[in-house]
Every structure is written in structure tokens, then in C-alpha cells.
Image (cartoon, rainbow, N blue to C red; front, side, top):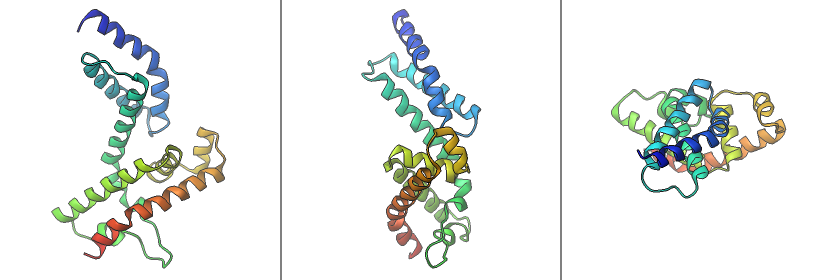
Length: 183
């Protein structure tokens, strides 16, 4: 790597490191996860920076960080499926019969993976505030008070954001549910 490129990479790391780590910390449970993700972002940046120039470095870095955070949740969240199961108006559990009662077969493993892919695609469609509240509360088991303390938002605002997120997820995942549950 040439000296000017090395200086450019070092300057970018020095400029964005603290803010990027704070951004990642707000979205993951542990400091170790945040540091691992930041390390991955810098590794990917160092590989790309030696090639073509990146037009908007800040946007690129934050997009890579978001992708790494999503990858982390995809890897971990398959164990917490029961946390996402909601009760409908009739008191029936939504998706529970499909995934938790079914024996582990290649077909059910495939269905689970498709579900998680669909869920995270639907989460990516949400405004960041709604997505973050849903992930923090449902996937990370944080209370609304903990989220309010971190973000400074009113608890009622956070509850409202989560409600909109759940409505979107239910609408978006309804086709998936109907297709697999009625199969």
C-alpha cells in the first residue's frame, strides 16, 4: 500500500472512529460486539480504499456498519424465534405452530431461514427510529425505560414507534405466514 493511501486510511479512521463506535454501540448489546463490528468496518474500508475512491466516505462507513449489525442479529436471532411470536385477536400464536412445534427437518430449517430473511428485509424497510425500537425491545430485551434513557425519547413515543413497526411487519409477513402455514 502506498504511503499517501496509508495516510488517507489513517486520517479517515482518526476522523470517524469515535462517532462510528458510538453509532454501533447504540445498536448492539455488548461492547465486545461493537468493537468487533467496528474492526470489520475498518478491515473492509482498508480493502476498498486501496482501489477506487469512495465518494461519500461517511455514508459508506455507516452503511457497512448497519450491514454488519444486521448480520450479527441474523446470526443470533434464530435462537429467539419465540420472542417474535405475537398473539392475534383470537388468542392464537402467530407462526409458533409452524416453527416451534415442527420437527427439525431440512424443510423446516429452510422455512426458518426464509422467515428470518423476510423479517430482516421487512425491518430494513422501516424508518430507522421504528426499526431500532423494535430491535432493542424485541430482539435485545431492553425495556422502554432503558431505551428512553439512551435516546432521550418519551416512552409513549417509543411504544408508538414499536406499534407502527409491528403493524408493518405483520402486513409484510402475512403473505409468508399464509403461504407456509396453509401449505
